[in-house]
Image (cartoon, rainbow, N blue to C red; front, side, top):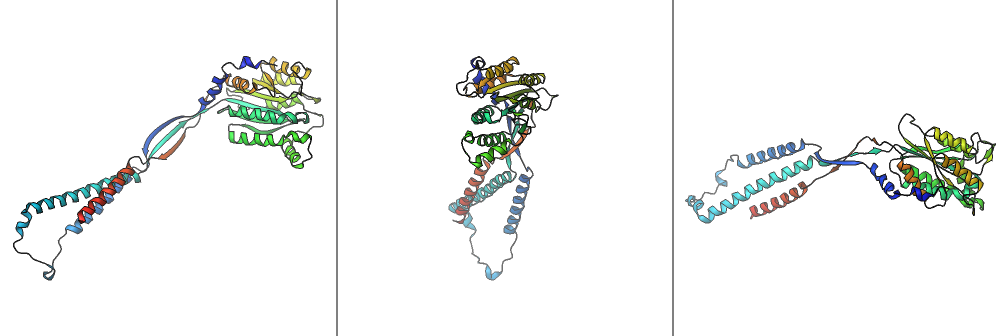
Length: 369
């Protein structure tokens, strides 16, 4: 078995590198309806002009409605009266200015000032196929291995992930995708279906869940746990062969072959290598089994001989080492289609409008006095 310590140097740095695929954001300010500003100001101006005309137009006064006061011209020259008139005119102009201020604020609010966020994301060109043996001898280990798969997924950002399960034949649970919500949901379903209590319980709900997951993996009577055929099927799941992509398989099996496969394990590893696919492995070891057992040694020699690595399924170092290996492979990040979002940003205009309305109420109260 590979010494995982040799692969862990700088693992923390590589795990951190997963965040480099997060979108670069640019935020700019804009106005959705700029025409709303002159429209609101125009409406206020028209209403103000009409109000001024109605107030200042000549009104014919009937004699019986008029109260004439003789010798009252001197009143306007009284200092107290002159000061009162000046204050009254000042309050009137303050009211006009306040209305204009509120109108401007209302215009900008109606125009919808927004922050426009442009996110230029990156699409990682790394593809990982999770290849899981679901034969009877693996039920005891599959739940633990799915947990390892989940930890791997949590460490990736932008990579495409697929899951294929096999016994005598293979079934694709989900193809290569970067929809991590879907990936996590499917892994949770797989974990629930691969319950080791199946080995001791006659609970039909557990059995039905397992059968639903593994439907299509017993399409041949030639044997079970045909590891080579399962790995070969996983090697064929990679698409976009004409693009420069990093391709990896994480194979999980106990290498307990029963039957005659089309591909031996070594032939399947060679097929993957011919397609530039790296195969890393998780080994479902029986209790007490070590790396020198014939099955473990055959499994490790095949994977390590092709440049991959393998770990016992309960090895705590496996996830970090495989994440580092995947992320250290050369890959080109592609620009994703930019995502543009808008968020309303009233800014100071709400406060200007509120303060303006408050001042207008104060001015009118003073005028009424």
